[in-house]
Length: 348
Image (cartoon, rainbow, N blue to C red):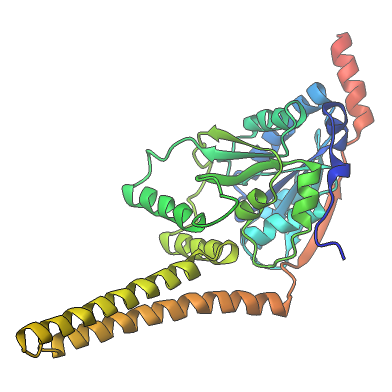
């Protein structure tokens, strides 16, 4: 029985990489106000990629249970320079599930993931594609150039999150890396073979390895609305990410247990020493209460951490589908007409 997977057959040269095409996956949730503008920008960059690399493109809009007119607008988007797929999930399953749905429906070789709120600039796509086709990188990920405009506590929390999730990890997750990234055909094949249902996309895309390169960028302002990620939701997602990808909290629990046990042992030795040297009994009620409260609180925290992992195990054992598709539609771009139009433009 083979426990690994050989994806070397999908290795491509610069000449053959362009022939495999590019699928652009865009998860959307209540993005009706800016979806048409975003689609036009994607079509414009697709035309540039077709002219420069002869690269065919498709865009996959995954509607993650939107409550506004996002789905109806997505259905009406034209197949201008790109094939258009619209995948509507039966309810809001979350961004990780939407990314997986887009990956499952991607028909071309490489896959690029970007958000639907306009903060991931489509103009950066050409640079990501260049690193893939010309430089031979398998994973081209983007990261915020800086967090100078964010509150101090948020910056500290983000740094602490990455420090915790990378603690003891063999494959580190780059700090500030986002979901805006391009995966080559063999990286896509590797990612599709990971069977877990509690997925942390940034961690998995880093874990598969291959040649990876970072591209720093400045996120654009939101084109409309406000973010739906409150502090409480971000905390929940952080816990979900850490427990889905790392055992660092369990290691921290073990380390804390060792520290408390060592501290209790040393405290006990100090009491014995004081009794032996002075003959006086140490008043014990306050220290006893504080010790019990401390140990009790730590135990409850550790039980909560273990409970998170048990919940993940239960979820994996249930093996429920990650998402359900309620509607799927496709529009195909007619390449022949586009080539004729390009020739007429060149002749003129």
